[in-house]
Image (cartoon, rainbow, N blue to C red; front, side, top):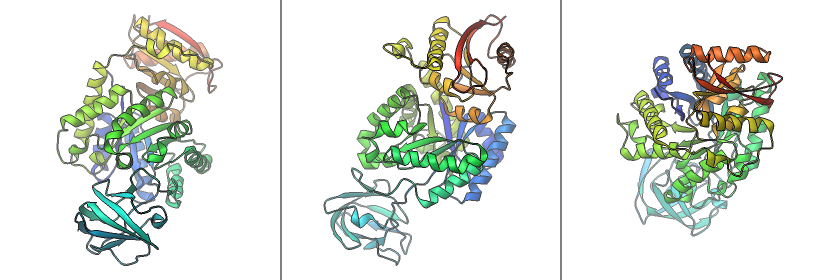
Length: 477
């Protein structure tokens, strides 16, 4: 049976908190579990992280844990009756000074800076763009508007400014507390919401490294691209991160729905070129929150992200609060596999005009090229940091990559890389012994059999990060 290369990120929530169900989801194909820090309290996330580790151990497969920070709350306040229905043409006030609950005429603001960041003529989008209002005037702390596109507005719905321009910092005091919580259980990745530039990501990395120092841990940093301001600075944000998330919800509200598909393709391509991973997210299987099968459009959406080269596709409410979390994972895994089988890749195109300055990178590329042309059954990277496997995974190749590491943290991190199957092997420091152990490991798992060819990379001396300097082509005897 073909092996799926694209990874699946599933969000945990009330619908997927049962350990037996979580075990089925991991067996069905979940590679990364997302803990959404916009909901719940610290202990909820600590408990869920422990559960993930226990279930993964039972299944015999390491999965990565992603802590997704809430970011700034640019939201309206609460309403006396929980919600109001806004009609087109009516006047509506967003009042930062208001302390009483909202009504049909006005509502308070969680984001108190809004009156200083908008002006007459600006367009604001509420509730993920379902409601559109135009700013008429700003009077003190009150933003006076006219409803352009009406609808139901309920408590704490989000506010976006068309074209971007709201200055809320990417990291709030809550996020800083949440980083400490995430590091207490050594989350493998931290996703930063609404970064505007590289500085936001550098600050997040510093906070994570300080909080994780006592555990001798360094998480990977994921920049969620969801602000209009992030697009012109995409490259600098990418270089300051380990990977990015194409967060299509808020991004679509700020730049417009029509602009997102082309941006998604550009982000996936840029991430691969810069040796970063990429996750495609938001509404991928949205209809399966309530239906047991996806729509044809959703199937195409997931498949196109796979064909473009995304490392992972993400499920949010579908697995956190939907009626069919397991079925959604199974459907997504099948779609990914079908797209990969029919995706034609020419690896030569990836190497034309490329120069490799690092020995380890050149070895990784040599392994890909040789394995492709020799019809190898597998590429094996013996890796300490995971870098060699990451570089290999940036090129779309049908040969599966097996990353052998003696570090559990590295194994978990590599669970997110496309076409990489991370395996824990307590390898010997002696090179020849380690190579023999690696082949035995592959044979035990039926990855290779007598007569099969595979490529293997390692470093001398063994166990030195960044030390990959050897490529060997082996035939199984």
